[in-house]
Amino acid sequence: MSNCSISSIPLDITEPKHLRKLNLSGNQLTEIPLPVCRLLTLEELDLKNNKITTVSPHLKRLCNLKKLDISRNPLEEFPFTILEMKTLENLNLASANVTTIPQQINQFTDISEIDLSNNQLEEFPLSLLELETLKAVKLSNANITTVPPKITKLKNLRELNISWNRLGEFPTSICKLLTLETLDLSKSNITTVHPGIKQLENLKELNLSLNQLKVFPMSVCRLVALETLDLSRANFTSVPPQIAQLKNLKELNLCGNQLKEFPMSICKLVTLETLDLLNNSITTVPTQIAQLKNLKKLILGGNQLKEFPMSVCKLVELETLNLWSNSITTLPPQITQLKNLKELILCGNHLKEFPMSLCKLVKRETLNLRSNSFSTVPPQITQLKNLKKLHLSANQFTEFPISVCQLVTLETFDLSQSNITAVPPLITQLKNLKELDLSDNQLKEFPLPLCELVNMEILKLEYNRISQVPPGIKQLQMLTYCYLGHNKLDQLPPDVRLLSKLKKFGLEKKTN
Picture 1 (cartoon, rainbow, N blue to C red):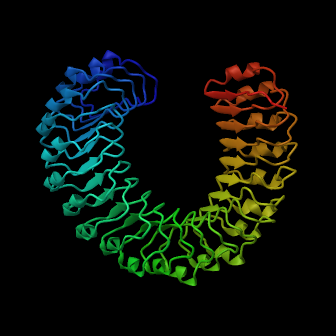
Picture 2: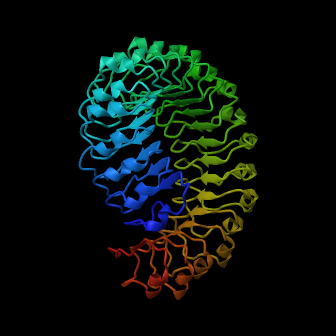
Picture 3: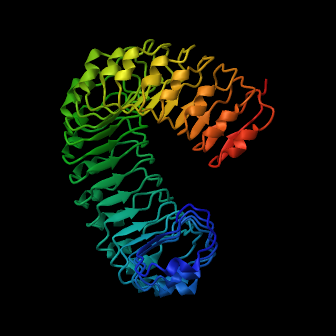
């Protein structure tokens, strides 16, 4: 019953006598409906993203409730009623307008997870430190400036998220939370990492992104159990050889730093499955990258590569390869070795021709070649039998590439910012198309064949020269978003009113 715009609940909701889970999120509820409080077998109740301001005292009747989510509601104060719900194990009050946490919260004897993120608490709630059963504490963006030394009382804590706060320095008391497995200190205004972090021998996930570290924290290299490490946008220029000690690392994010060279030591992290080096200043990729036999996702976009890195072709397990916004002009034939590639992003490069070799990567589901310089698509593209998303915008097209019409699995096609004047009737073969972007072209008429694409959900035709919309548009009963602004339309086409699922219809006037 989520996202249904309901504002009340019928009395017969109590009919399912053994209901254990109820999701009422994303509605228009201003209070917790009384019938819900009669569902005595409920174990999970999701009320997030409503308009609830107070919590009914009757909620405490739910004597079996273990999980309660009231996040993203404009509560007027902390809901004291829930303190009487002794069975609660998971409580989510994120973005709920909470400013203080009462001492009585220590009445929860079985609570294992609590989320108070995106509130204005101003200080770490000391009352939480009495909840020794806690395994996860989330206090992201809660206006916290310090972490109390007594946090060490949480002997069972596995996850701690205090990101996006104003800490200013690394909280040393965290180093004594020896059971921690996940730690998020991103965007916390810290400049150094305390050497004591090496004591967290069970840590598997560490996020230190968006801090001004300037130097790669050497102590992190001692956390040999790490599987995920995020040091993106941390403002450092090199990676030490000691990173090779992280023998269990599966995901490494170093995007948005100031690396001028590909760190050779990374090539020894043979367990890596995801490597993100987006937006650095790397010019070449070493041949040793071929050692990363388990790599499935490689992101090298936003660097200064002038050639496609040949060594990447040996990463045969790759499923995603992102090389956007470099200066690549051609692709080697060896790219066909990437038999498992599903997503290839080469937008914003200098390709003057559609690379024929891409047509042999038959498992690919997403191909993004936006903002290059080619004008045709070869017939061989029809070999891509699994392609679902194709982005060809901002190239040099003057005609609609007819071969695309045979890609019957396509769900998204973007040919915006081109110079096409017509759409071929064969486009009706794209029966699975859900999103089509032909904006910023030279279309003088609404393409009639589009009216037969009955699964279309998003249609973008703004910035053309269209003056009329045909009655056939009413056939697009799945359409939820239609953009026809900046054309030559003077009024809302009458048949648009028959589109029952339409949420937005853009009809801004052309300015010239």
